[in-house]
Length: 191
Image (cartoon, rainbow, N blue to C red):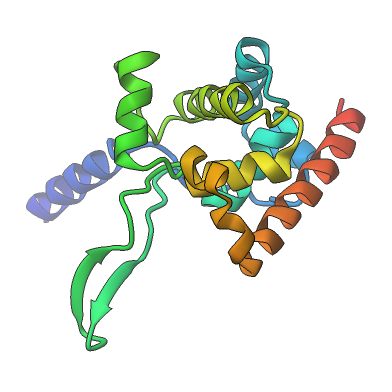
């Protein structure tokens, strides 16, 4: 029996040392509830707004669309013949769903030790990326819809207009814009 208790204690201790809390907040349709449940999210977004000028609601709406606030989110696997795994759809990972190459560029230019599954790094990345979109493409940081299109397609794809041939993506971007407006109204009423 003592062997069982020791093994159980060891397993409990190991389980408690696992990675961070990557689960989503409970009410993703309420910016105040997100801020109350995860105050570190709001602090990270406010820091990004001060540093880069990207409004909190634009960051929140983009993170909602990209990862639903799940810190270790990944794209689904691709399958051959329905049974053979062929790898993930892309290298997107974390809150911001940044691709490997874009994340590495951010690390080289801004924050060498940044991690995609750390909310403060993810929001800082979004601030940096959206600032580049404003400077290179003229997209205001307050325009959640256009910023999302440039974020999803990449700045080069956006400049080429690749989003215009994707009705589904235009619908998603419209939803991101509507969510940003909803979050903005809610954030004004938070204590």
